[in-house]
Length: 197
Length: 72
Image 1 (cartoon, helix red, strand yellow):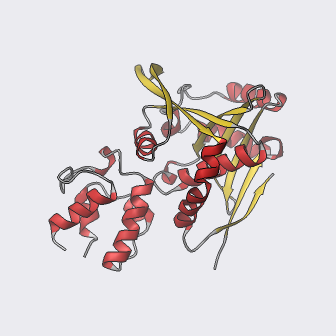
Image 2 (cartoon, chains in turn cyan, green):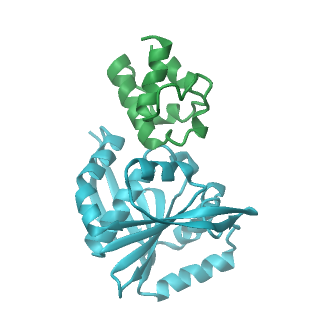
């Protein structure tokens, strides 16, 4: 039985080609239309962004891999005073949508935040262009802490932004069921050998 | 299983009220048609029709009709 190996590689350990590739992934239309910054990021902007991340001890970025194939990018900003983290994440390829990679990405983001960073709360904002994810959150009874009305301007139109929070107690309660979902996605190829670098 | 029952199964997979879907309903326009629903669909097709459908195939479905046609 083949096993999938999950790996999360931090920014400071990524090679230059991968760091440059992050800009291409970020500039994909399906990512931009769900981001506050929705113009195509220039090389200069990307370089500035990466330098800021590297120089800020409260920020980091990971590329997630399954069997050495990159499938997601995750970056965070920690608020040490309040022991919380603000997340930003996206898939590297539109073909990964609706294939369960989003669930796998979410699972490992929470693993990093609550088991490695040991935060009390994970915060995020979801622009309403991501209708299906928002519908899923509502269906699953996830707590939407607020709606910022017409808060994001994308392609000339204003969209609402949903504010989501996950507390440590929420993570503990839901971890097992999330793991089951991840395993059901990968089915005969369970994820083993999780490495965080 | 009748066509009506297959549509009802799709509604159940997506946790929609009975009568919400038709064969011509476009899956992309349905908020509830996401990766969780796709997983459930794959499982139901395997359990009820003994067919293995890959996620990559399901992603190509455009309408409910495409999803129901597999159910044989």
